[in-house]
Length: 188
Image (tube, rainbow, N blue to C red; front, side, top):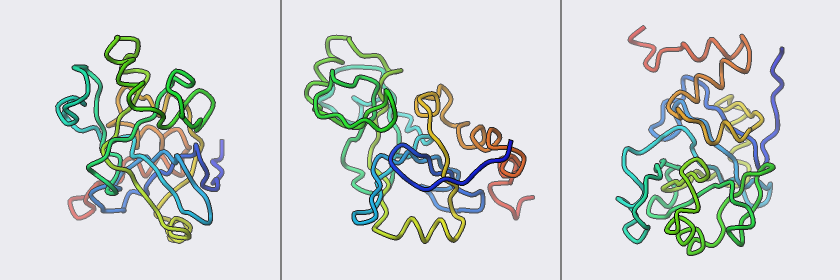
């Protein structure tokens, strides 16, 4: 099966090429939650878990076991989230069928406190990834990223640290070789 390059849009994924050597974006899979030509792009890095629990970083959150991810370099002091809860969290925006971004945080906290939400239904991120209008298009022309489809399983992956290489392998032979590319080519 030959992989076809997609255009960026809400609900698509960006997969970084292997030689991109950036603290945030090296070997990253980014979920696009917003993309417009006039306003730019917002995304969340899916495969960079922080080894702290949510309430260790955001003290006002109820005690819980929800993992926390590094969403990107923009506003690292702010919390962002995607979830499967839909209408249960008013103000949510659907990204792909069954997956939502944002919504009323107080309602989400209430649901967590009442134990009506589990960690498989929500992903929390500190910071987000952002591109000014035209910036992502330039990076795509430079071949820094590949755009592909997104699925619920990708966003809620059980082993997010393996997501980058797993996604490349699923995209076919042309991309599977990227998965084995050394993180530091000098060490090859």
